[in-house]
Image (cartoon, rainbow over all chains, first blue to last red; front, side):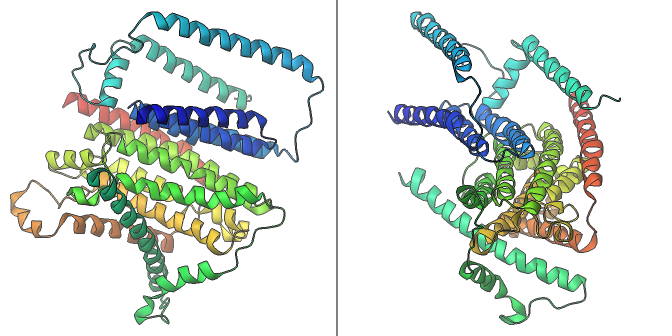
Length: 171
Length: 332
């Protein structure tokens, strides 16, 4: 019961903040709403008993990535309110198309998952030789999901090297 | 009901007030120690040896006029000091001040990560303070501060990984218990990590010799130039509360938390008559003294030197330390 109330309160907060992110006139305010949005998502993870994910969400997104956004916005120094786009209609067509695609995807997930009962693979199904949230996650990452994990790390490494190359051409 | 709501709330109330009082006395301690280092007396007027200065200063700050600059972003200007103070207070929730359950608010299995994550939110206070002031020097200072904090956050977090590897747990209590089982404080196996965390901690709390964000000579006062009264003192409180956090974290990770020296050596068991919290606060006091001592001794770094130290020295050493720790851990 309490969990349901918590979930819906958080959902309203998350959606409301997401709307504020795109409607806020001031870019810095918009970024702050984004931070609050991420923090609310972290609370959802806590409710789902995924403490590790929650803390990583705060650490990486709220504490790292968005700080960089904020610095970029401050360096660009947007004085006053942004001007309206030249041709808002052209952009709104793309926006509507993208929103429709996401909606379709969500509907697909709903239809697809309503058939099967087990929406989440229960942790009891996997025999863990280790105890605890972080330990089990680490175990899964280095056994069942080893290849995706390694591919993702190589991808991040490539992105990092690419960024350094772009920033320092004369090397 | 009492166990799940009333007692934690009481603990939180005691903790928050305790931290704030401790902060005011840390400020007094800093003034006194630096005065002694410079052959002065420091505050002497209020109370015996100026002890009541710690009470009088906050009262003065509360009573002062609180000015909002006309061109400032009012909401952000008010939000910034709150954003920098609250995370500094929140992290104390997972710090174990003693072995007994009475001495900590909660023990979560990701305690250390929780501390890193919550302190990383504090950066927003500094950035927004500089931006919302709508003033030249605060903006420069807050850009410096955010670059410095992010760089050193990476270095410190990388270093903490090797400590986590040594302890095998992320829980703050688990880390102290791991030291009890091992029979020695982790300082003796991770001296490099200790030095890195100490340097990174100084940089993350904007303490000398890394106090670039509030270098008076260059920036007139740093990111809080436009602040006055209570909102200024909130930044002040946050800085000193962060100093307490760093000392507490260093004590827990490297100096055995509430444990006595060599907790498994029976010959030293006569030391057990000293309660665990006395050990903890004693060690914390030692580190606060060290921080103040460093401030009185070392001149300020130049900004490019600071960034070079962070990225080209600390982070490579931290990564090397992780590799060495992992190899040793697997071999043993």
